[in-house]
Length: 285
Ligand SMILES: Cc1cc2nc3c(=O)[nH]c(=O)nc-3n(C[C@H](O)[C@H](O)[C@H](O)COP(=O)(O)OP(=O)(O)OC[C@H]3O[C@@H](n4cnc5c(N)ncnc54)[C@H](O)[C@@H]3O)c2cc1C
Image 1 (cartoon, rainbow, N blue to C red):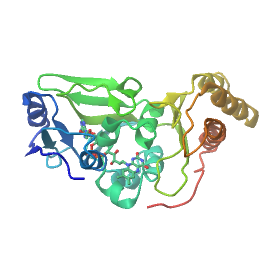
Image 2 (tube, rainbow, N blue to C red):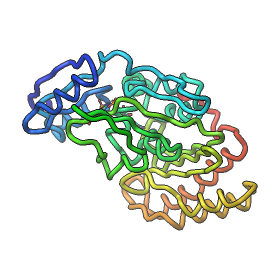
Image 3 (cartoon, helix red, strand yellow):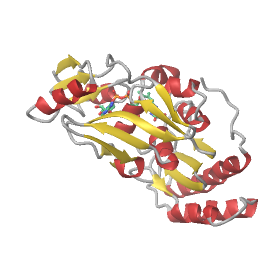
């Protein structure tokens, strides 16, 4: 199928981009970044915006900046490929290399992935586990949203129609773990787990078991209340995670199968967090 007709503008600045969004009367304008999620939706006519606002030529949005010893700011147009290449955050490096195939990683952006809010996508899960903060601009406003509050449901975020993501502030976790199971290389994960320790507190987020990344609060409590991360504690935390999720089954895997994956992948990500070793040495780049 071909997309429904739309107008197209190229924005020169974030302020101009959000003004374009605000000026469209039917509030159906959409930003286009890498186009890796939006273009398929347009082609299937699942999205029918009257205007596309291209932000790809806005200067300054494609950089990763160290803003303190423990924090980086990532421009919304930073491509997945650049996250693979950077060395500030090994967690982001690991997560980004699991995204799709190299062509998708070359075009797709962190802002697009967060805004698209696919519950199985790697970056939203990492954003919640690492406690990222999303910097948002509207025609007359600027605000920040904790990743935890940004995701509302499947493909639903908390942006207003005339707001855009400008950048993301990401703490650099002291320790982290990441584990994913996908049927084939490049597929979205059936279940994905990110665990991150920031300022001594571990958060664990799981994708593929709900309409948005889900925090494993009981498992986090077990880990944070304990001085050492023993094998026994990791097993206990993994079982608590499995007991807390209620995923739907589909043709990719039954609910029971996904629950089993949650247990195993939480176990692996916590082992990795404890050891500092990558779970998989496979190079997908
Ligand atoms: C075959 C295939 C496999 C894929 N596999 C994976 C995978 O395994 N894991 C994964 O995570 N993703 C996967 N993706 C999706 C890919 O990561 C996309 O790049 C990403 O989801 C969206 O980023 P984008 O820059 O392409 O956004 P776009 O497609 O341009 O936009 C997506 C949505 O975000 C909005 N948007 C974009 N930028 C902003 C902004 N700055 N502010 C506000 N709204 C914005 C757009 O309006 C649109 O609604 C896959 C895609 C394909 C086609």
